[in-house]
Length: 221
Image 1 (cartoon, rainbow, N blue to C red):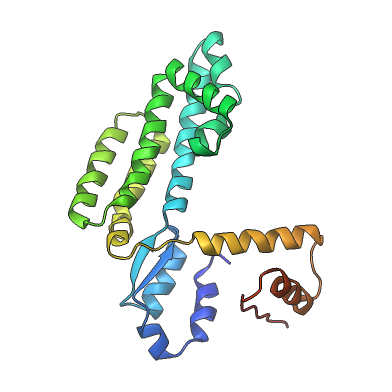
Image 2 (cartoon, rainbow, N blue to C red; image 1 turned 60 degrees about the horizontal axis):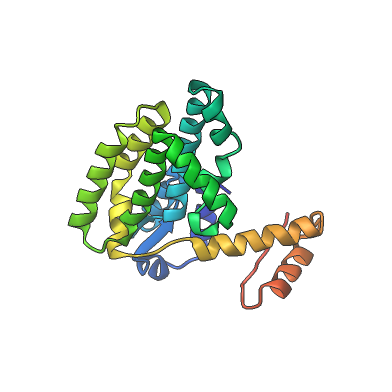
């Protein structure tokens, strides 16, 4: 669920001592989650997950890519066409031929090269353990990114500045949601292979079998 009520139900199953013992919570930049955590665990620090941050920046890259495709001539379009996956993926996850094509694209288009470099610099913000240095790097990133004139970039910069507290909190609490996202993806695969489950208890059983050690509960009615 993506609503605050979803987390309200989760926190309802915890004691006050348990809730007061939570020091930090990792999440994406979602207002409903922030509201729920602040309501139930006001002392907890909110940490925004790197993956979801980069995922949001992917919308900027794709917006600039579409704009450049419409702006340039036929020759440059041959480099840009079908390049969405190359620009959004990590370079190390690409095949050698895909890495070669990505290099040709970045050499052919300066704006796409700029937003791609900014993606790597955005990830580097999460390498800092000093809030002071992380803040300086974040401010510098925003100044450089502002030179890329595009509505989606302006929106992303405003979002970064508004939520910078959760990025800086990563210096003190280097948390992420990657393990949870991995479990969720495995559960989705189980559901897809079975074409869905009409019985929630049977579904919980299949998940337990596929993911030993995971605590699974269901709520019916």
